[in-house]
Length: 381
Ligand SMILES: *Cc1c(COP(=O)(O)O)cnc(C)c1O
Image (cartoon, rainbow, N blue to C red; front, side, top):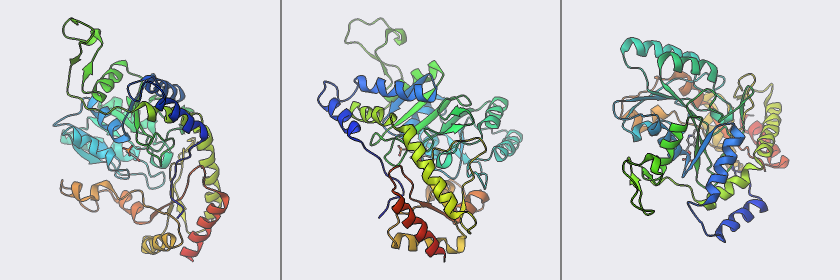
């Protein structure tokens, strides 16, 4: 089976992990700060805070934004459930903004329209989480303007998009948002096994993120309520979690960062081959916003809803590890039970009905890609 995504591990990666295993620190050591500095520097953000998963990154980000009970978070229905669940973790309500049918990202126009309605109804969102679907950034300029007009916090879920660009701006720079979250799960752009990061340019948010990741505990006298009676002393200032990344993981991540540009170039090269193969056929593909460089976490083909199930089954039958990203979040039983129904977000639902994710990863060989293209053609033929 050719999987839809797969990590690429080098001898350098292995050596970096072994070096940590032979060192003093397996966790809470120097590899974390090195990894964080590397990611922050690459993205052009002031701070990167490494955590145990992309989901933990979202949880930490909404907490740092001050979201809580009685609050409201909006995200895209075409994402992994974590983009919405983070709002529920802190007791907030969750709602969705429909996607643009071509870019497959949260539509800035739909967001503007929904905000107008929400203002009239007296229930504006506190946090909005656009998701850079497939690796191509959402249209952040108009979203920033809306955030300033309506006073909500923008958190970019960039789990798909590390290494991508929005115009001249690297994804993760937080030029248009308060925070950006990343995932370093093996199918994503770089891996640490499990892991994630939150990027921000705000010193106070960075401090809140670091507290949240480690039980709300500080050892920094500056933040303490009382005088430290000795070197053993620490204070728990708020309720946090153990969301730490290990040094073993961080060393792998730092080593992977050295090849991020190579990974993104390899993904783009393979995406171009797919684009060429499907041009002029009935197969549709994601439109990358003008000026964007997509990190191409995913390559999605779009077929007629009537044949999607059959095409999917045939591809699996041919050993192609296709998948579907994503079942609209609002149609999950958990969210249906919170009042969402079919028809609520028509563009998302129409997209889902015809979507198939085909294999795309840096080490995908040309002969494997030819097998995928051939299998798609035959499955449709
Ligand atoms: C993978 C992913 C996450 C969650 O990341 P984990 O590291 O698996 O917890 C969140 N949002 C999106 C869009 C993702 O693709």
